[in-house]
Image (cartoon, rainbow, N blue to C red; front, side, top):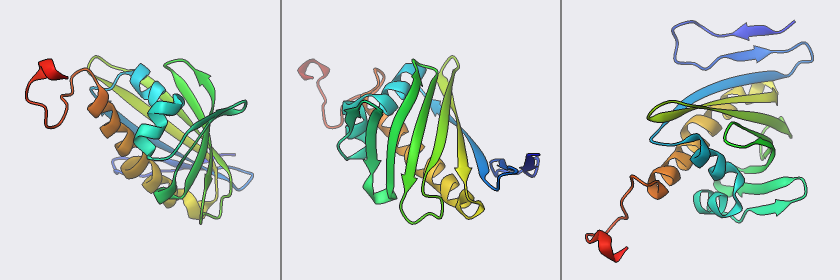
Length: 164
């Protein structure tokens, strides 16, 4: 039986304890001015991944391999459903959980996209690490990238749009 660990009304994202001893965490985030296709591309296109992670991303037969060295994260984007869902296999240095899997579901709204991250296969000791990895780190960095390259953004330091 799966048990839910969540206090209604709290800002804590819910986590679940499974019979096999692993845990899952659900994180939701709203990406303002970001479309589902922009977010999808940010996690699946090697050039986009390299731009926002600061590390090379490589397309392999198993998916797109990428990393964020300063977060101790190695990942592969796999099982892709265009504009809707990305599954990511993760390896995080220094975590008791050596390998885990996250699924990112994208729900478009009129001016934003809701990203729902379900991170599965975690040790209980890694729940807080996973919260810190997704909310203030990976999703924020990806959000800034989308805002920088989106059609509504303006290049920094350019005063004459005709010169861009």
